[in-house]
Length: 121
Image (cartoon, rainbow, N blue to C red; front, side, top):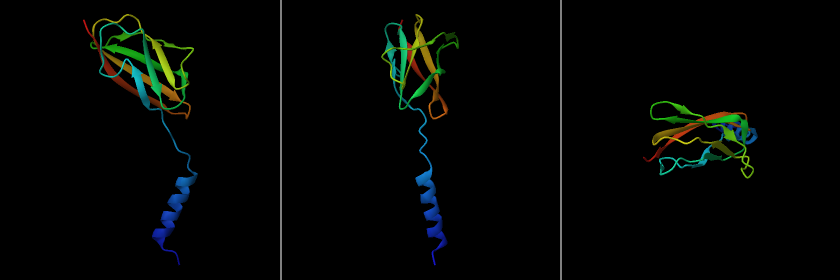
């Protein structure tokens, strides 16, 4: 007779084998990089993720140290991969800036995050 412990383990292994892996979008790299100190305002924010994203349903916001939001419309760069989100950046004032992003992954999940960079005076 099979023990309850072995039966439970067998069921858990079967469920794990047939359940598809869920891979939410993870930010792999960014330009400007997190905690970077820049001498000039960047023309774009470029975010690269570990899987495909739906650009039309994703967004980027730039927020200064006082909470004011600078417009950063997403752009369709010709050479950007399906894992990349590019946002045009207007000229920014010196100071601390926070990049806030929200992407709609092709796995159907919405993932968001943020990081900071500084523009030197």
